[in-house]
Amino acid sequence: MIKIRNTNNLVGITILGDYEDLSALRDALYHYTDLVLSNQDHPDAYNCHECILGICYDIRHAYQGDRNFEAVYNNAENIAMLAECIYKIDPESKESIDNNRETFKNGNLYFSVDILYPWAIYYLYVLQAITDIPCGSSWYGKLAYPYNEYQAEHDMALIQYFVQLLWKCVKTVLPPKVFKALWDYTRTFNHTEYYISCPELYVQWLSHYWASKKQSRETRVSLLPMLFRELSSIDSMGEDSMLEESSENDDQFNEFVRSINQTTRQCLDLYENYHALVQSISTLPFYSSDEFYSMISEYVDEHGPFTEESFDEYLDDTIGKVDWDDMEW
Image (cartoon, rainbow, N blue to C red; front, side, top):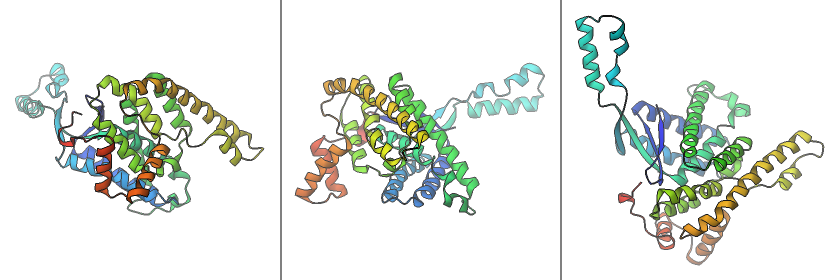
């Protein structure tokens, strides 16, 4: 069974599972997102899939034993305990039971991998958004073996379960009102095109910032609402612009838009309540994605396009270096 937990210092989350758990999750993420995103008429769909391949890569290396592993309690000492209480077991069966208890007494072998919180939030949002896409799509009914509708829905179910585990994990650290506002917002309105427009450099910037600051767990708990808000689509479309897209007589749609707007305002009101606190405890303020891209555009105009190496240097210069090999998760 897949498990997800917060790391000790809230730098990220840990995804755990046995070999088959993680292998199945990786396959579902790889094939389902390839199917959905390859059928989107969106210029950033390819880049979005490349980002999803990042977590596929980490999960694959986890179950190959290249990351972390641990024994997970499995109640082995109670194997066939009820049977022994109900009836007398013959010596041969008793020996088999005792051997099984001895074999599994240290727990099941689980592999694990740590994911930085900004990327975990991005995966949560984008996976929740794209699992809402296929069923009504014209291309969905044209799937053929081996990746037919059955396999797609099987993978979608596994991804949806993974998304719910992510929500369960963050529910333990987000303030209840903030969690409910974000939960209600994403359930009411998944702005799919926003999440497909993968803000890869922005997520990298947030991740570098999140990892570089040696902050207490309590401080990170206070910063998390800001992080969730910045990576959401809350600011992407207001009520007026959405109403302009509807017909004058479309009362049902207009009511839906107003419902979205009300939930959005609740999120933004909560965000404003945390803004002063964040500014007081954060040595480097968060930038919105628009502010961030405006900032790096000025840099690119002066120095030319980023390479992978030059962007890493830019992050080190503007935020500070991160010791990735000795990070206290």
